[in-house]
Length: 375
Ligand code: MG
Image (cartoon, rainbow, N blue to C red; front, side):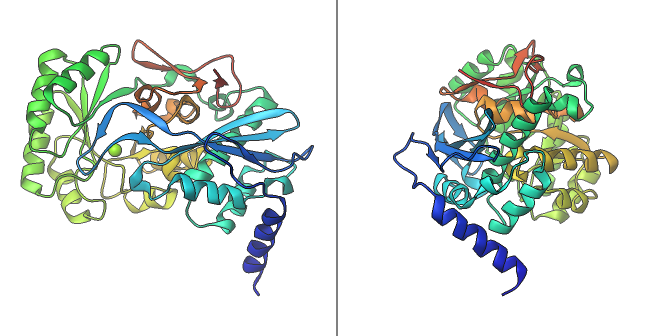
C-alpha cells in the first residue's frame, strides 16, 4: 500500500469512528466537539430563488446549498457550498464529502494550505464542498487576527468595483420587472443564448442606459452570428461578452476574440489556477467563482496569476447566501468587474454581510474574517 492510499484509508477510518449520521433536513450533522481542534458541522439549506433562473441550457427555482460551521476554541467560522447543476455536485455529494472529513486532527486553522492538501487526498473533486470548509477557515483566521480578509491580502475596500445585477432569460414582462428591481445597480448582466436576445437588450435599453455585460453561458455555436452580436452589443453599451461558445471550443473563441470589439471572458472554461495559464491566449479575462475553484485560497491565487498574465479579472458567484458572496467580496478590490448578486436572488438568506450602496460593493468595515453575522 503506498503512502497516499494509506493516508486516505486512515482518514476515512477515523471519520467512520466519530461520525454522527446526517439526520433530517435542517439538522446539523457533527462530531463530538474537541477543544483546541477544528470541529466541523454542516446542514443542508435549500435556497429559494425570487424568480425562476433561466439560462440558455437550463431553468430552475431552487438551488441546493449546504451551510458549514467550523468551531475552534469558541470561535465560529461560517462557510457555504452552493451547487448549481452544471458543477456536477449535489447536496448528497457535498454531505458525503464533508462526512468523510475529520478536521479534529488539526489544531491550527492557519494551516489552510495543508488542510486543502488533506481534502484533496480525501477526494479529487468536490470543489463546492471544499469551498465551504475553506471559507469557514478563512473566517476563523480573520477573527483570530481581528482583520477582514481584504486587509490580510493588502487590499483597500474602497477599490471594490460596482456589482452587476443579473437579468435572466425571461418573458418581456418579467424582464421589465427585473430591470425595475435593478434600478440601484450601475451595471446589468444579461443572460443570453436564445433567439430573442436582441429584443431583451432593446427592452432593457428602453428603460435604462446603464452599461450591460452579456453572459452567453456557452449558448452560441456560429462564429459569424457571434461576431455580429458582439458588434451589435458594443453599439449598445456592452462592456464584455462572457463564455460565448462551448468551453471546449478553443478555435471559434480565439477567432471571435481576434475580431470582436468587446473583451471575451472565460467562465465555464476556467476553474483552477492551471486553467488560467491554459486559457491566457484564448480569452481576455476570467470569471473567478469560489464554488468553482474550492474557495478563497485558490481564488486569490487565480487573481494574482491572471493579473500577472495581463488578463482582466471578473469576480462572480452562484446563487448563494451572503456568507459566500461576502467572502468573495473580500477579493473584489482586485477585480475589474464584479457580479456578486447571488444573495440578492434568494428569499431565505440567513446571514447579514456585504451591502450594495449606490451600486458599489461595500464591505462591513468593522467585521473581521469574511464579514458576516447570522441574522
Ligand atoms: Mg457566467
